[in-house]
Image 1 (cartoon, rainbow, N blue to C red):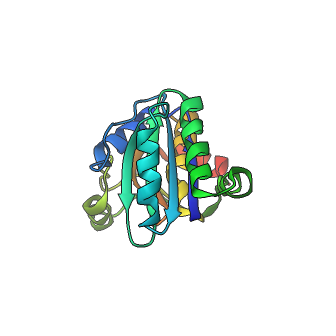
Image 2 (cartoon, rainbow, N blue to C red):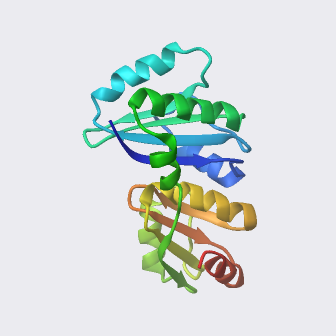
Image 3 (cartoon, rainbow, N blue to C red):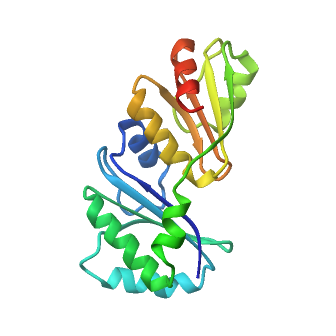
Length: 199
């Protein structure tokens, strides 16, 4: 099996936890603020069925809270209050898949910003366009909006969680972990600080 992505988010922040709860139709349980969430994506959807079966039969492991199986890959999501338990699940899954955690997983944790765009006074039509696909806070005409593009799309949630820790006054408009975009709103001076923080 090929490891496509590995992302561990610790100390889940309130907005990101709420976003996961609101957008997680396929989840068997919903992570709470303070929890840890791990997402591992393996290439090859059929091979992971056996891996999933072995993980679910091991009662010592934390519960799998989400599963998405696609033709291009198969993503597991694990969540719980204990980071140590989540890391144990990760090590077990990687071992069963024949993937080295040090060589593959830990090197895939880095996050880089590809580009940012600060819009200080959103036009009415642009606000409408953003709101058509947003899953968080609604944006109104005249609001300030900061848009991030992450070079590694699957790390967008981790990046937002880190930003929220430092800037809890931000409001999340949307996270697109497939396209690698994060859209935030706040006062312009706060968004400028966020932009500088992430540079």
